[in-house]
Image 1: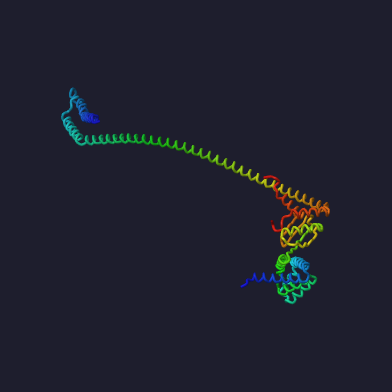
Image 2 (image 1 turned 30 degrees about the vertical axis):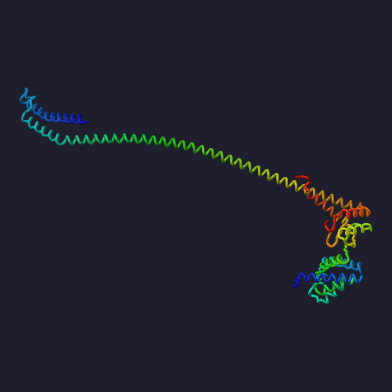
Length: 203
Length: 191
């Protein structure tokens, strides 16, 4: 970098010298037209010396003041670029680190999501099984209650029928006894009952 | 000091004793039995005829009026019964008639070794059955029994005997009712 700067400085000096020489050539052309021959290509000393002096002075000034400033600008620019490169490198490392971190988080999130889905599926299965079990239990309960109800109604109907039969049978028996027994048969029954009856004193 | 209950008991015993002694002195065992039967009938009548029972025990009438009413109502009864019941009405004790009845029956057992067996049958008893029933009472209670017979065709057959509140129901109507109850209550062999 520093070499390139020096080359640039030399190119500047050559340019300045060329610039200083051109007026001399111009003056020489004018003189050739007037004098002709070799004098055309030779500088006029009266002009050349002051120009050289001016050039030297300008070169000293530029070397003294311009060049350090220019060099400082270059160094500053170099430093800025280097810093930018460094920051860029750090940013790249950071971004790679973050990318890895994001990938890790993404993988973790995917695993978590998978786990959530699995849990939800398991919960759903459990709820489904629970609902089915409850439905079965309720159905069994309803069937049992219906059976009990049917059994109770059946018993009630049987009891009613039984009572009706009992009433009819007893009524028939009463009529038969009241109509068919003679006094002698009544007395025979009384005798048997007195003999078979329990005691008055409970023994 | 005697309590009200003891006083009441003594009062009932005095009424029953007066009735028993009077009947026994006047007519012996037959009169005692007659008075006992009248006591039993009037006791039932007092339950069924509220006007009579309230009139005989009412404080709106004077003692003399109640006595006169009792004498008029029971004019056809035995004198022993009539006099004692009239006295009870006069003193406002007619509500104790049931207690007097049981005390009277107790006196019969104690003093005459006699009890009355109320017998209900569907046909009239013959002498053999009467003897059989008396022997049963003698065997069970050790008392001579006087039978108070009544015929009630509604019992269909058999016999109902009761002595001093002890009752043997061997009637056909009761047996049929028990059979009816058993038939209705039995579940037909199903468990």
